Length: 91
Figure 1 (cartoon, rainbow, N blue to C red):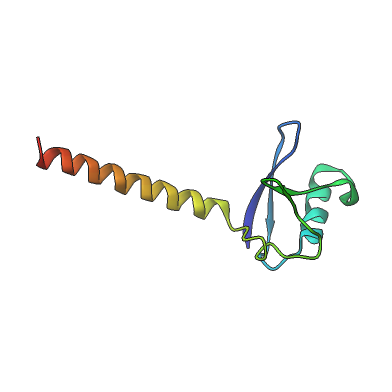
Figure 2 (cartoon, rainbow, N blue to C red):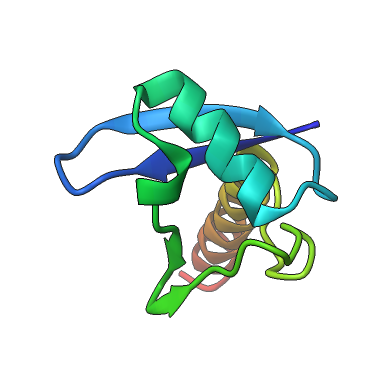
């Protein structure tokens, strides 16, 4: 189970829990149930690409955003630690 954060043009954010093997069409149904819009009216984009209903989230390499953020934070922390260590060693 992964969590996906979906933004709309009005600035609303909705968090959707789904499986990586769900299709985009199934994701649209989950989003429609939460926001009250018909699934046919929803168009999902990743950057500039419009997502097609028959492909899965894995096909588009859409993963759990919480895990990605944690990885980025850990990488940033380790880089920061390395730079402080270098400064301490080379005054």
